[in-house]
Image (cartoon, rainbow, N blue to C red; front, side, top):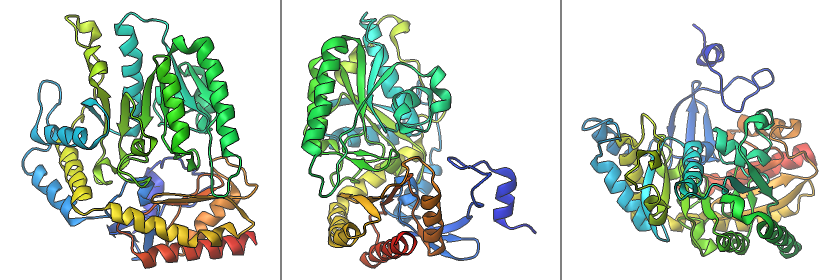
Amino acid sequence: MSSWMERDRKVNWHPFTQHYLEPESRVIVSAKGVSLFDEDGEEVLDMISSWWTCLHGHAHPEIARVLQEQASTLEHVMFAGFSHKPAIELSEALLRVLPGAFSKVFYSDDGSTAVEVALKLSYQYWANQGETERTRFLSFEKGYHGDTLAAMSVGRGSGFFQVFEGIFCDATLLPYAETWEEDTEVEAREASILAKLDTLLEAEGHRYAALIVEPLLQGAGGMRMCRPDFIRAVTERVRAKGILVIYDEIAVGFGRTGSLFACEQVGCTPDLICLSKGLTAGAMPMSVTVCTEQIFQAFLSSSAGKMFTHGHSFTGNPLSCAVALRSLQMLEENEVGRDWERIESIYRQRLPEFLALKALSRCRVMGTIFACNLAGEDEGYKNQVSEKLRDRFLARGLNIRPLGGAFYVLPPYCVEDAQLHHCLDVMLEEFASLLG
């Protein structure tokens, strides 16, 4: 009988994987808390929360209980012409905890589609009002917003999508004011970028429908961090030109940056916000695009041509809504913010050890996220040194997946102090061993 790994190789095509070069995928058969267990019973600590989704730990009994109860009551109903209690309660809860004047929740299936919805809403918002010039979007270099067409267009600077550039929509990329520990030039960098933005807006601000930005942290672009003041200054400038603002909090929502939502630290709120990943604590696929009443009102008309013609078969799925609602309640009930502070304090305690390694650069900490770069390494998504380190970490029982030359830790909030210290110990040892 073939192993599960061999069977997988014969039938499955994995995402972001060059199957000609990369080893076979490890088959996970169970999980608990921070731990994954493969078909041989080997344990792997999931130190990146399985692509940043798993907030409370794997196989959480409370999440499983709610999922089972909902499945025995109502597993699915189309969301056009029907609604259901879990979606209503979740929308009410999200609108209660989100800062700002949000009014309506639009459900979709994953982060890419949440962004696609936001961009389409922004475009049609202006079209419905007869403003036909506002057809462009503003975004940032290295930003990643998903893999659907419009999301790729505003994320073209991530380096993932060159082959598709011939079918992109119109987007302008701005430099991103990334910063790190012991960065002495961030203010000058920010001022230069804002000056470029001012020039662009003065000349062509009337042509842009919306700005989209990952506030405080560019995730897949390399865990690049910026200061709240920079995002606030950008937001205020584009707002002054009437441009809509979209915050992509798919990666950073629900506490990852040390506050429930990153925009709380920015000090201003967008017109639309995209949420996914941690929304359902990694248990079910779902996303939301939340907007203000002003945007919603622009689609109300006696003409069917002004309605928003977008939807998915599993929009507002009751199972996903029930899980997301319980996860949000758990964040509030368990005062998980204490775990955010605990995790960050460990990072800062260990930070000097990473700063002392000459093979590393741009060490940085934000909330539950620690990241550093290999000095001098190519920042493309794949490189040989990073892949070798990834394999060495996995051999030592750690799921740490680099983003080019960037390595990061972003664990479930239930991670124990000893587990986190062990992870950082192994990283230091392997960096020193391989890089000197």
